[in-house]
Length: 619
Ligand code: GLN
Image (cartoon, rainbow, N blue to C red; front, side, top):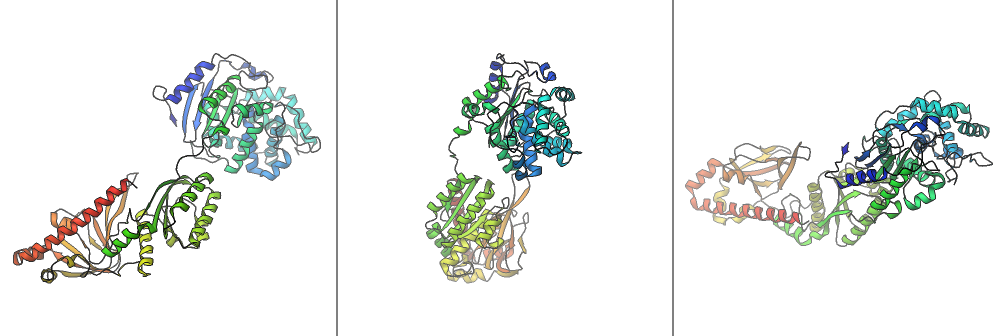
């Protein structure tokens, strides 16, 4: 858990300031209709904010225990929805605000159904469903559930429980009335006992803030990662907290504070800013409606000062598209023959690479679709890089599938890069593609595949544009040599063949040979570290026919820094150090010519590499 320090954190400073200021607000009194609650110390006062990123800001009595009381209601209702399903619960308890006090005996005159699960009648009916379902284990089930919500096991305050059981005649009468209407179908005393026990669960202000943050996080505890509630149930619970959570004060509350909230006569109150944070306040003195006086005041001020009302949310402005560029600006690490390089440079706008980021909810997806539609006019291939997409909600996945299908129908080839963390099976099925042709775990390889697709279209060559223009002698390195010297250099080269996957150069070995690709494809890789310090093998370059590799270590006399392997079955023309030395002695003019060609080759590579490197900064 991350805790803030007010000396260096202004948000912590604000919480401390509110705590300090509202300490002197001394209106109200602790509940006394449950005798044990009247013993609470009116000076107790804690404020905690918990964010969906798992950060805590706390002031005052953040760790002092008190009984949860009615704040248990929305959570136990969530548990009932989870165990029994919405259809079953709707038959027992309504979802309409009652406009009455928390302990009103407010049942539908014909069905006997309580108006909502936030008033006592609805909460007792809700608890009864859990109690009747499995009387033996009901309490353990409730406590296990609260342990997940909070991230620690909670106890029950036995004194408060007995105090309420002994004096809770009004709740008892509600329970029997519910039995009369068959909303409770067994002995109501069992359900009432469980209800009184659930109200006597001991929590701290910090626990309540974490519970509120769990609701803010669609039912996932952001501190532990546990998911006690589904997003759908959380949505239902929050809606009821908004409309009924503060009883007959709910309208004013929503108008002023604008957050789903729930209070308890133990002095706790929690409020939720969905998707953002949870707030909890503990202060036992209550107003005439049974809400914590300081709790209401602090929530009001926090909402106003921090702009937290649900009805005052900023339009989402962060960009969904992190970067967008064409292949004219960024190429794969596969070195291309000069004609292919030229084709990619001249028509690179036919390949568009779009990096998407964030949570792709509807608003983000709508923005993505608009930006794609605007940028794809000339494109034939789209690489959608999803590495920085945090979440793709199911509803959005469906829309994305439909959108990509529309693009595909208009002749666009689609590749999805770095998307293994997302469920895109629906998208794949909609596009009717095999996983190997749609998904690619590596961005560089996705771009290479996009280039291949484009070059195949460009060259009218379905093989992937590999060799139409490539020939070791007519286009490649050797063609740079004057024909008279070319033969003399070629005579020193020894042909060597490799199987697919065979190692050609090993990192750390001496650089005693220079390679010229005759046929096939050869990939140089270096070892890097990923963000977690784990070794990561990354491609440096892939060479095709006519290109030379291994020259850096060969010329500098240093050891190999990269490994090279043969991607396919392939062959190279190899110049060994002894033959190179021999040529230097016997044919200085040819050697001169060879060195010039090598300098030229290295210069070209350097120029392309540094150009790309610089370009990358501006993508
Ligand atoms: N246990 C209390 C009761 O039923 C809970 C009421 C409340 O917190 N509003 O009276």
